[in-house]
Length: 521
Image (cartoon, rainbow, N blue to C red; front, side, top):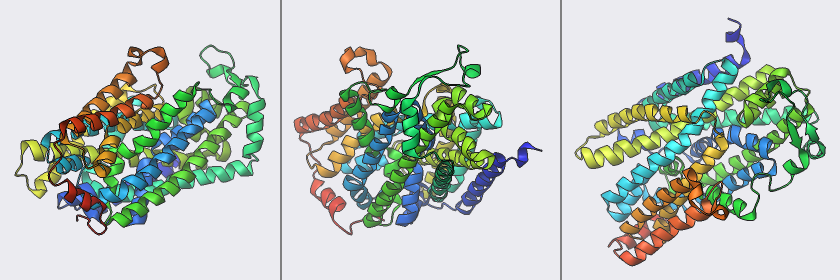
């Protein structure tokens, strides 16, 4: 009974209850448009909040602060790259994509090139990127449940997948969008309260950064939880300098390319622009998401530094010190919240962390279900499918995805959330980013060029992520965007120039995506 009255339980149950209620109110999905794109009925504020909720996943709520805690300035640089990505998305893709109007990401290739083969290749890439992205979100949820509620890692994965199947399967895009918008403000509220608590405690940025830089030696209070039984060593000068994680200029550039361009190619973010009523609303939504994300990233970096200062001081409770050592960088935000504001602030942060996971996973589920039901089943298996059958197929796809994503989550138990997501960004940057940038802005792109870009971009990305040793040592990058992204772009350009089979209606397509007032309902 005592645990049921703890703040973390009360606030988490409140979040779950809110999700159930919103999902119930959004359960009417009569058409494929309702289920997959919410009837294109969301205004710029709601959709901007939802884009922020979708983009600011567990990787940002937990991962950015965690990477800053672990790597110093090299970790904080991740936030800079993510911010660039949203800006590029707003400038080059948001408006044209909404004017095009469709249900799924693969629709763009299917209609742009009148090609079922291009659509099929896009489905494979959507599922690959979504799987890569879903695994770290499930990892975050399972770690939170394990650390603060005492459940097993496996239970956390299964529980989260069941919640997502219910959440997305019943509510569709309508329920997903409203929940994502609400969950964003829960997370932002948690960060703001942590900021206030840190300032009230005298943890001003310049003061704690100087203290961290001056620290060199063992960290008091860590020996009981360290594997070797001795206090963990820390070098403050290395942490506050550059090159702590990315030792060369080219490593840094490679990460910048992978993360900044990866945003443009994330299927679950691209899909959000189909839900706006107009291109103008899509651009305003993107700009709002940029503003929210910028504030969020600044707070995440600051709180990562605060967490490091608290850890080095060695004066936090045994529970906090244990969690920071054993839980690793993924648990920095919850542990810091507990040190700053006790159980109630911890409870709000835990609810915010669940909100981050649910928000991002719901976007991945609805995007991948569209790829399976709309792009695969309706295009290749049952062409005469009705609207109602499309919705049913989407719900069945969500059930299948719950099982598949759950299996992936079980395989990444000891991974870093932030780094896993960075790799997903690299795959997106090497596949869909060239397709959408060139498909929207270059008339001479062809079907074969698009397919080549997707296949080669995906293949090279997977090769260098999982088997980096195939390259000479000087070409082995932690995030190989400097190699994979140019390969993706060049594959599209070279094959298109050799092919020359440009669609006959390319001028009509260009007019549609670039002319004002040409949105498809």
